[in-house]
Image (cartoon, rainbow, N blue to C red; front, side, top):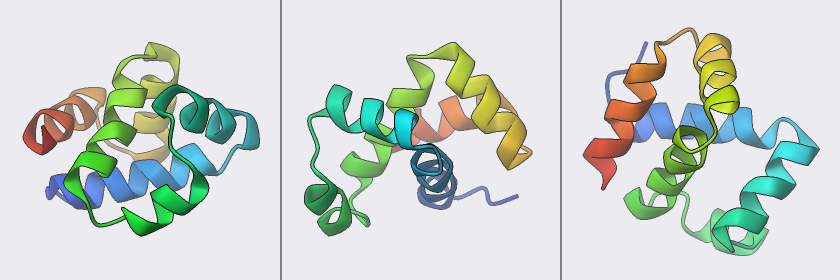
Length: 83
């Protein structure tokens, strides 16, 4: 399990984008476009937005944590470090 917040956020992004409905909701709520997401993939602010998206929807947070085999608190802590 990576401890690096950027690595955690990248894994979370892959999970978010793995479901079309969830990916569409992420883009709509963040106001990002697919192009902006691609261009900002190494930007801590963009990756922080992924974790913020999960933190603001507990169902997704818990599901992502389970899928990534990490604690929800680890996702939340990574978000705090990227802010």
